[in-house]
Image (cartoon, rainbow, N blue to C red; front, top):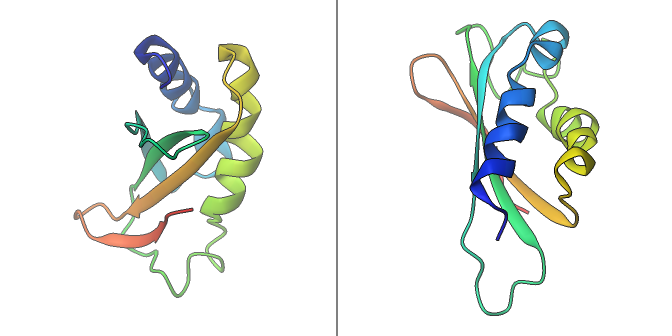
Amino acid sequence: MIEDYKIKGLQKLANSGVIMSIYPMVDHIEIRSVELGPKDRYDRLEVDIHLNTEDITSENMYDMELDPHYLIDRYLKEYLPYFDIDKVIFDFIVWGPNGDIIYSWKD
């Protein structure tokens, strides 16, 4: 399991402004480690991507230039070596500002 201080550091970098400048519809990102089961070979992180606009739906998020898969693969995974984190599975939920789930992914 990934240590809490590494997850907090990763979350702080995710919310530092770089991702928000690329994805202005993202309000903030929360990251949690998931308890590993006996058959799990890799660490697992759950990511909550909170949006600041009600205009985005699951049907139009790509048209509105929100690609959560790319956000995770390109930007969050880029920060992993800074915290000596390797071989992680990401699950995520995209949340609307009113608390509705817009999209989710579990690998």
